[in-house]
Amino acid sequence: MSAYVVRRLLVAIPVVVLATLVVFLLVSARGDPLRDFRHKPTVSQQTIRNLEHEYHLDKSVPEQYVLWLGDFAQGDWGTSFRTEQPVSDMVGEAAWNSFLLIGTTVVLSATLGLLIGVVSAVRQHTAFDYTATGFAYFGFSMPDFFFALLLQLVLVVWLREEFDIQLFYVQGKYTVGQEGDIGNLLQHMVLPVLTLMLTSVAAWSRYQRDSMLDALRSDYVRTARAKGVPRAQIIRRHALRNALIPFVTVVAIDAGVLLGGVVVVERIFGWPGLGLLFFNALEKSDYPVLLAWMAVATIFVVLFNLLADVLYGVLDPRIRLSGRAA
Image 1: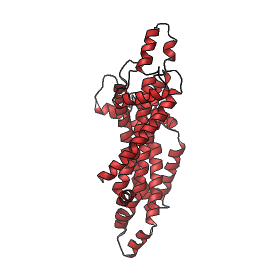
Image 2 (image 1 turned 180 degrees about the vertical axis):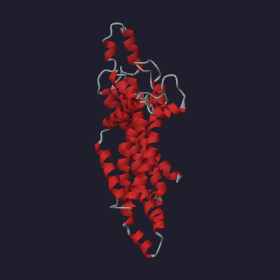
Image 3 (image 1 turned 60 degrees about the horizontal axis):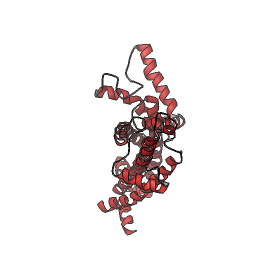
Image 4 (image 1 turned 90 degrees about the vertical axis):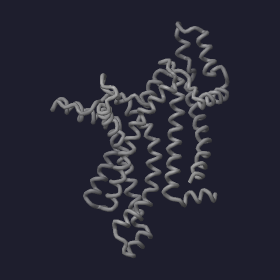
């Protein structure tokens, strides 16, 4: 297994380098990063030259990329134009906050999606299956931003105005004066997590349902039935184990994609994560933060794809063996 993981890591490294190159070129294509500074009469020419030298902007684009990649790999991500704080500190704090949302969303969505998908497949064409299908269509058709606003309207505004109840909050990570209170943190997390879960549960439950149906219709399951193996054992040991392989792959890949969804959700709920950091950096043309953010997001997605490969190998040893043969 360790050799399998090492092989996948070796494949992931050039992918990360290529992805960061594309990200660097895209950010560089936005134009002069020091444009705002050049238009400020209070910023001296010497300051502009110092910034050009610090961020290697006085060199060619290929040289800029090589030097930036070297600094990035060593943890030197520069200083924010907007806050004048180290970019590594800003991205690290925001990444942890986003991890809270994404990690909670993935765990809850995968558990719920798996249960709904399995039950829908085992009880196909029943009331539960039709209800789950209706929920999935609702989840697919409801935009994240609209669902977020709907939750705010119903679970916060309506409850407060009609019953004078404040169960959840719509902005920030903590209420002012309650920093560090776990209960208050959970109250702030509920609405953004529910928003992120909507599409994930809808997609993963449908995927698991189809995967489980394919497994239940396979020859080895029919053979097990013919041998008189109990139904519960067929579902648990034969069908579910094989149906989990594509499900785990989809969950791991989609978990990386959730970083894109969290950008909108964090903006709506004022959650101080990577999404809000991206918006602020984009609005202020904060070049060092924008570049580090895009690189971290790319690495994040590649790592989750790597995790999917590893889990795939754990669930199906034949994949490890075929890779060794190749």
